[in-house]
Image (cartoon, rainbow, N blue to C red):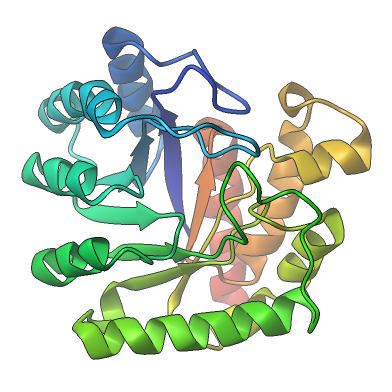
Amino acid sequence: MTKIMGILNITPDSYYDGGKFNNIDAAILQGIRMFNEGADIIDIGAESTKPGAIPVSEKDELERILPIIRALKKEIPLPLSIDTLKPKVAEAALNEGVSMLNDITGFSNPDMVSLAVQSQVPICIMHMQGTPKTMQNNPFYKEGVVPHLIDWFLNRTMQLLQLGIKKENIIIDPGIGFGKTVEDNLKILHNLQKFKGLDFSVLVGLSRKSFMSRILNKTALEILPATIAMNSIAVLKNTDIIRVHDVLEHRQVVDVLNSYNVIAE
């Protein structure tokens, strides 16, 4: 059964909603709104990872994120995830009650791995070619994007299991839009069953991403229908979590397709 992860970006520069929720009151209201609209989990991030994004300091990230986590823990009963690549930010978030770690670098930092082992919370391991600043500079996979990703996930998950991460806590994310061409992203969606075949939970994050804008020649503001269509493919392929900006619009889609998948089985 697919779950909905609502995206809460507390940033001035995210590709779709940058600046909408980068103050405490707006962020809290959006978190409560996503809860009321049917989110299963909320993923909170305070550093943009769009193509070309410039990193923010640890201090700035902590100042942005901690008041929001504290407030939402009081206001809503949903589990919270922290979207960060910085171990100290992740640790501070865990201390405030966050119950999932989402790292776009695939837990490449040993300190992040140690924190995951200590906390034993679910972790999302995402694939990215390069860094946010460079990832869309002519991404290329000699062996093809899907074989590359399968091999990468096999190696990365084996390493993490050997280091003490429990299998049931590992979620894999193929990183749509993170060092991928339009064709790469479509191939990933075509082959989601291969990622499911690795026997880990799978997360897909494609909400309002630029590969759809390029196909349709429309802006991120105009591609909600395309986002719903692509996420519907992910749900029909039994993806465990879809990460979305628009919770209300996806809740009915997920509920009806979850029912369809149950009957189909």
